[in-house]
Image (cartoon, rainbow over all chains, first blue to last red; front, top):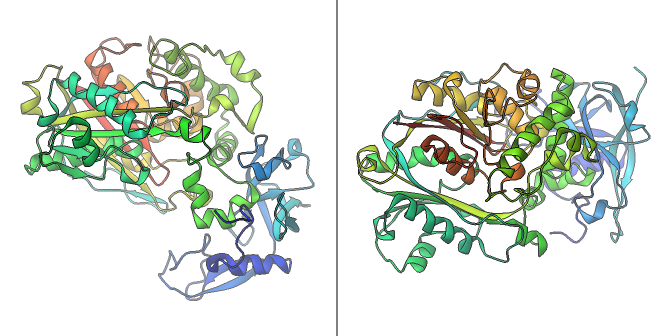
Length: 144
Length: 402
């Protein structure tokens, strides 16, 4: 495993643009250049039409809270200082079939609700013993 | 044969009709333990030896071996020969082992037996994950941590490992269908009760009530630790042959009546599965029941690959034991208990309370139930079903006493 695990490897080609976008406070998702379908997770060919070219497309950063958990046990030592935290799936407004794995932040877990509107904020991923940090899209409750 | 059409999130694998061609004639398990210090091969050898004794067959009779090489350290042909001091030819299939393959190995074995490639086929699987966890190497999360997609877009947010994935699915199931913690708890309590009646179960001495379950603190809310399977060392094996040869062996005739296999296009990327609160049993079970000429109502005992309570609940729905979304109400109270429940389920305790041997012990238990020799025996069980699961795939295996 990489020395800086569980930080993402921002040079890993299939998600390089995702992390580059996050560093500029943008949520970018690949979109098929032929049929326009969003392709998340990154794939070699469009699931709908087979096209191999994608354009990384800026999303509004708005979505709905699809589901979430409150993690009380650190399954990796790197998360020990973070528990409890909210890990979630957010369905993006432009294409709800695209669900981002993310964190809900600045929220009261008891106040979270299914399909509530959320918006992206950009926060650093930091882990103990890892000097580097990576800006990542996380989400906060938004006004409807 | 295919009773379910393809959908946007998965499809059945078409299978040939093998109903009534082969039988399971011997079953065996190793000891199921917490960290034992043993290797998977040592554990498997114990299970294989017991399965052969149960079948009344010498090692030299086994001419087919099925295992799961991707799991590492498994009981392969070299291990078989080294352990038994044999050197004969073995038909070998890498489509065996636990999980989904504990359910589909009889299908591949039936085709090999039909083709004359083998006569007596052994399927074997073992894990030493409790030992590995104590030594901080490997374990069920490792394969997910090493997946580059997960490593780069899921793990950084702590959406990892399996308890997190399935607690997220459970919460959505609760939202969509009104499923409650107490309903998930009923599954855990049924498994534990069965384990307390099963001397070989890891949790045989740890009773669990619904009140205990509800009082247990959150692990990955909405999951408590009782929603999650054990981590243990252990293994199992079973021997298959043609129904004709099985009639000459010592055990009651337990035929393979039906097999089904279903697939989810999004594989282990659960976050992207279109039908988020379903399993590929939707695509597996109908084919198996059609092959067997049976329906879910004919099933006397059910064993399900149960890494988490919610995975059992979803499979119960997806296999047709109740309607989708009604699983919570279906499993309440003692519905899953071996003595009088409407659907006796994981009568050895399952992965939640018996052992985390990834389904191989479930098939062993299912055979014992339809033979009538289980510890928590269902009265006059004739039809037993195993549901296997990996995420990308699910399998249904229907066994019937003849």
